[in-house]
Image 1 (cartoon, rainbow, N blue to C red):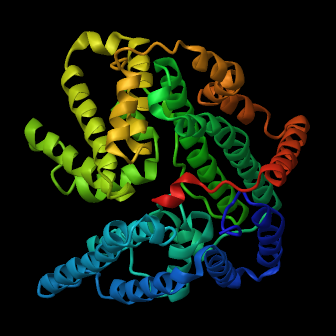
Image 2 (image 1 turned 90 degrees about the vertical axis):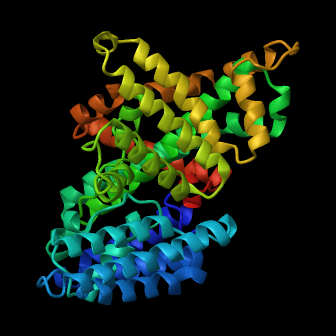
Length: 451
């Protein structure tokens, strides 16, 4: 899988330069073909076993989409039946690999490209986008390598114009490279480094750590998963911009949120928007009373949990977040809650790291041990807090930098100075420093490749 990873030497120094050169010299009308071929090569280098599955999915859904557009009331029931069969077939394949196939055999990107296909079919049926007659455009939309493996989940209507007409410019190439380097640095220099603390605690054993270390490790994992996935999303946006395609943002400073509900409006936004548009609103949203709204939220969060995996830990994660959001809705009716400034942030910073432990620890018995540690529920611990002080002395600076990178400070400075020469030199230095770190330590796959 070494060629597949955006943060691999092979991708950075071999695949990407060659692809951009070929793409740049390709006539404008043929660039979709170049992108499609490049995407197939990219996927095959990652997991050639499941390339036929991807191609069959593209081919079948292309022809099914041609017959889903509404025509007349007489044929509406046929279109509805075809839509149900189409959605059912796609979901059946996804469920097979999610549940019975096991994580070791999960085809790369199947959760992401399946959801994009479903959104296309539903939008065509609703008449919100026109059915695509060009197989090349449809195949390019589904398999586009910047977003194929871990999103962002992109609706066809949002990029269909870019697939028809786009320009490859020096400015776009430069802006895309800047975004890509920022994402690469977030992955290699923050996520991979701060995540070592979490992995050390796993090796040590949860029973042997103190409560302060349990919190530090949970915070480290919270930073790791954020900078890993946000870094990937920035790289995907950067790659798209290099080619003249604008992919949607997937994160908006989630750790600056003031509630769990607000957090997940900022985290993996394209997935949240997908569930809102295609599940929550069709179920009735919040238009049919509070009890129905609570039920609709439960359905959405259980489906979101299953989307990440079939393990019970994911349902614990989704259930905890659902409870928090329901409680927030009730407390939100009290006027004094809206006047609080600091307390909502503290509440979020306590809840989110605990929720990520439900996400990270697959063994429920070990999850209970860890949460007991975090909540100080383990009686008789007399080991002292030396482990926490040691971890803080080693990773404290990195945790501080990671926390700062979660705020708007660095982002605002970047937008203000991004076109200045010192920033360009700094980004070039960051790129080669990341290369050096990768040569030194090797590749570390993205966490969301597992989902």
